[in-house]
Amino acid sequence: MDAVLRSQQRSVEFPAADGYPLRGTYWPGPDAPRGALLINAATGVAARYYTRFGDAMAERGFRVLAYDYRGIGESRPARLRGFRATKLDWGALDCEGALRLLRARADGLPLYAACHSIGGFALGLAESAAHVERALFVGCQYAYWRDYAPHVRLPYLLRWHAFMPAVAGLLGYFPGKRLGWLEDLPKGVALEWAFRFHPRFHRFYRLLPHASKAVDGHALERRMAAFRGEILSLADTHDEYATPAACRRLLDHFPHAQRRFVQLDLEREGLPPMGHFGFFHARYRDSLWQRAADWLETGRQP
Image (cartoon, rainbow, N blue to C red; front, side):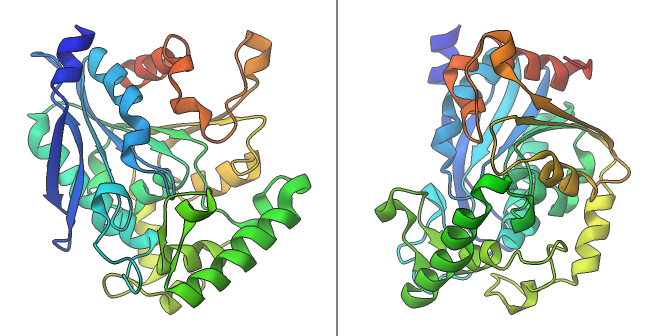
């Protein structure tokens, strides 16, 4: 079954809400799927990083869509310098387009989401997120600097809130690949991350080079508050970005959702620490991934 499902991986191209062409991978799953699952990536992480997780979820009976935000991976334009995009666009436009595609292919199936890092924030900004029944948040937050773990706060401030915007301003984009940090980032995404000096995510965002006209920030908060599904938010005790304060700050924007935050101490179970990126490594295929799939399908807390 594993080989059969993997052979069913299909490259897809679809429009974001504003028509921008996005690319990703779609797994149709078995003949009688249990639900449709959207995978929202972290900042600067290409959708191919989630391929093994997508394979596993298809094996468990889900139709799955993983996609690249504009400016990243297969959704990157020929020239990134001067390309207009922000994380707000990733949610309101790109995630919205992905949800529309998945809903069209879901044939009435329950709709779920697995979100990594900024992916939970992006989900909340999409109007169609109101149709999502359950969302798994893995290390999800939106990089407010005071929420970084205390022992890395100063170096992260220097890296992400000083060096990154300076380079992005100079080059017109952030060359993350060349530095061995992330995928390259559009200038607006880099600046939006760097401007997180205020706990309200939209405090400075009108100053950014958006792909489309900036929406009132409070309207975006109301859009996030419209989500009424279930959210299980997970973070590792070793995650320096997704601290309990950071995860709960994001969850506060979903006041009408059924929310639960769990901090994982995997070493107590004999499992390796996952940090911020490890959850989607195949070493968790028979442990965390199976529990995640159970929760997405049934809602029973693992």
